[in-house]
Image 1 (tube, rainbow, N blue to C red):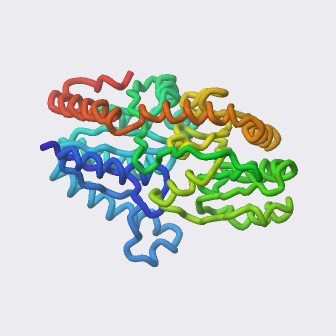
Image 2 (image 1 turned 60 degrees about the horizontal axis):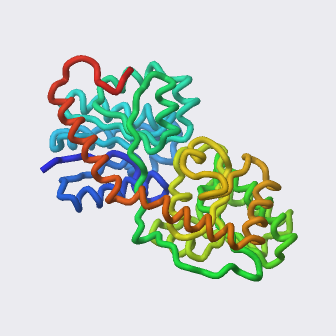
Image 3 (image 1 turned 45 degrees about the horizontal axis):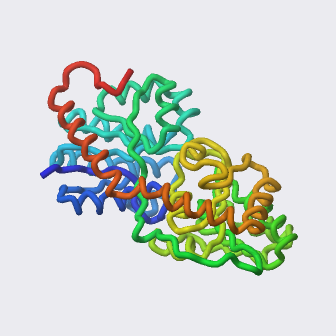
Length: 368
C-alpha cells in the first residue's frame, strides 16, 4: 500500500487550495492509499501567540516542522500543495528538505497564480530546493509555461471538481433580472469592487437584478460602503465564509458567475460554476484563457473594466440562446476535471516519483 503525506492548507477557512487538499485526501483514501495530512495552517499553540507579531511564524512553524519530521518516518512520499511568496519559503521548503533528509520522495503541486513575479525574484532559491524533489506538477498549461520560462519543467495534472456535488440543473432564464454570484475572497487581487460597479450598471437596465458575494476577507466593510455609495446595497448579499458543500446551492441559484480577479491560475470557482450550469463572465488574466474560451465556454473581459463586465452580463441576459450554448459547452468542458479523468495521471506521477527517489542518481529529470 502506498503511504502518502498530503501537505497543504485545510479548512477552515474553506478556500480553493484548502478544499482541494481535503478533497484529494478523501479521494486517495478511497483508492486504498494510506494518506495522512499535515496542515500548513494549523491553529496557533498557544493561541495568544497568533496575536503577537514576531511570534506568529515561530508558533506555527515549529509544530509544523515537528509534524513533517514525524510524518516522514511513516510515509513513502510527500505531496506538497505549494504556493508563492512566504508560503513557499515557510512551508514548502521545510517539507522538501525534511523529505530529502529522511529519504522520502517529493511531488510539488504548485498552484499559485502569482508564480511569474515570484519566480522572477526567487528563481535560484526555488530551483535549488526543486533539485531535491522528484516531480513538479501544476494544474494548468499557464503555470507550465511560466515554470518553463524559468527553466523548470512541469507536468500538468488538472484540479479536481466534484461533479456529484456541483451539477447543472436545467433552469429558465429569469425575467425580472439576472442573479449574479461572486465566489472569491474579499481581497485586493480578486477585485470584488469591479463586480459591485458592474452590478450597479446592470441594475440600471434590470432594477431587480441581485448580486451575492460569497467569501470573507479584509475588504468586507470597504465593499459594503462602495455598494451603499452606488445605491445597490439593497440588492447585494454578503454571505461571509461558505463551506464547499454549501457553495453548490449558491451556484445552482445563480444565473451568471462573475470572476473579476487581477491574478489567477486555474480558479476552481469558475470550474464549479460551469459544472453547476451557470454562465461565467471572467477577466482575461493568467490561466483563465487556458481554462475557458471566449464566446464558447465563457465571456472574457479586461481586468478593472466594470463597463465591459456589465455589458457581458447584459448580453447574456438579452440572448438566452448564447447563455444556453455557454452552459452546454461548460458542462462538457468540466468532465475532464473529474476524479475518473485525473486519477490515472496523478497515480502515474506518484509511481514515477517513487522510482526516481529509489534511483537518486544525478539531477531530477524535471529540472532543466
